[in-house]
Amino acid sequence: MNRRTVVTMIAALLALPALAMAQDKELSTTQTIHIKAAPDAVWALAGDFGGVARWLSTIESSRLVLKSKNEEGAIRELLRMNGTRVQEKLLEYDPGRMTLTYTYADGKVIAKDYFATMTLKAADNGETDVVWVGRFKLLDNPPEGQDEAALVNLYAGIYQKGLAMLKAKAEAGE
Image (tube, rainbow, N blue to C red; front, side, top):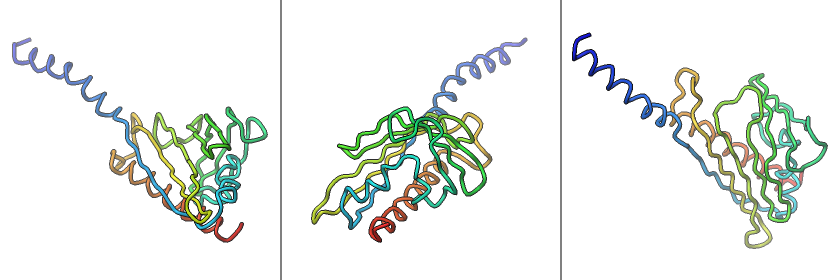
């Protein structure tokens, strides 16, 4: 091997950790909405971990497959409108603070190291502010066309549509 080949190989090897770290960059989105309904009424919808299909339009059906109520460790199975299935695990559930955190457990995930938290806060006039935060990383072998910006935009869109539907259902008293 000539010197140039050796130098090129060493440079490539040294670049691998940087490439791996770049792909493991944590991404996030935070979406909020103001809902003209009481926090308890909004929590009745948003806090029903197994019943997310009632208000999230990208989900055809949802059901608890581990545990029978909203409690840490519960797992829900979601059938998405595109026909894929995913399971999500409830990591934190605090009805007193009106917050829940979940992650992917199995199935057709669209990101790795995914953690989402939804928090409801009382606002003026007995209304509710909802904050939905997602943290995630690009898959090791993402689908074609999915880069970091596309993944952030995907989750932002899902959260925005979900919050809009949650608002509509809560304000209609459903």
